[in-house]
Image (tube, rainbow, N blue to C red; front, side):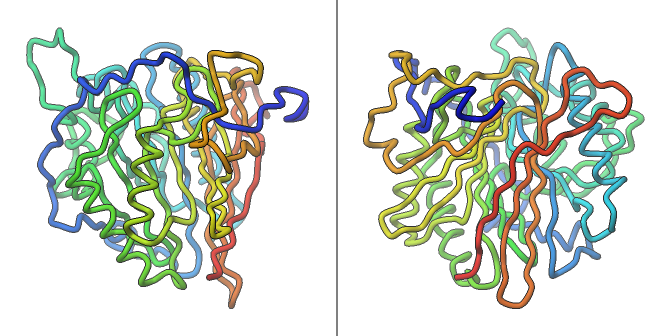
Amino acid sequence: MSFQQRNPRIRPVFKRGAPDDQEKFKPLPSPTGTYPYHLDLKQILPGAPNHKLVFHMTGDTGSLRAPDFQRAVAKEMTKQYDKTATEADRPQFMFHLGDVVYNFGQEERYYDQFFFPYQHYPAPVFAIPGNHDGDIDPLDPRKPESLAAFRKVFCDTESRPLAIARDTGRKSNVQPNVYWTLKTPMADIIGLYSNVPKFGTITPQQKEWFINELKTAAEYRNEKAIILCIHHAPYSADINHGSSLNMQLFLNDTFNEAGIRPDIVFSGHVHNYQRLHKTYPDGQVVPFIVSGAGGYADLHPIADPLDPAFPDNSNMLDNVELQNYCDDAHGFLKITLTKDGNDFKLEGQYYTVPDIMIDNDGAVLFDSFTVNLNK
């Protein structure tokens, strides 16, 4: 069934009457690394090529119930790593868009929701936290600090075995902070932490850091892509969250102050796949990709254009068009950056995963897109 036959919506939406629960904001933990919170991919993968970058990406993989969904996604990503025709096409790592563990990011949930499903995935996993990773169960008598377990898994000071990983063999990662930049030969992947509230919030200190990261990345604009990852989706056409005005205002301010925009923006939070394109006044088109169908059981449908509960007439949504979406299957992204002479591009492929896995069935290519990185 084609995109237009399923739903003719072409604009993102806001959700009418949705509470903006800013009281859920949690203070950020101290960084484990030094400013400006960079991690060089070559530190983790010394043999990573300089001319090609391939990686997986998805979000919202955690699940308290119906774990078959997250296991199916992990299985199909692992198969791509193992069965890709050439070594150069194999993903080098996975970048997680947040909500690794539901509902409150507890340490005891990491084995079932992360280590066990990804026990056979052979590549490193990097991550930004989602709202559930940072939330705290108010009934937990231990009263853990926000993101304590996330930091143990992803923001260690050295890579080491973890007791909570049990028999999987996966070690801790060495990301320098909960917001940070992965430096690679072909791209700067900037990861923000948008905290616990439903529509996200970002501290002034992190905003200042982000503006400086954009300015620094701009110095290498002809050599590297600028990729932004933020858990809360600035633009979305779904009925559960809708677009985040908080994130739109934040990005508009930072892009204007830095004088530069990223080449592409990736988010999770919304449990589906969406590819939206925003056209800025100077003609630059920035794809905003939602990839939050990585395993959580419940998927979020796209809003019907005639439903008054999801208005799309705000001028904050102007010049943003929904190009494609999938709201009825789980899935993941495979991102490839290549440079051949003057041809510098980012190619994205979104694969859907059948909910009921049977022999010989596997991930199906659902959507493809290309971003021209020639400046």
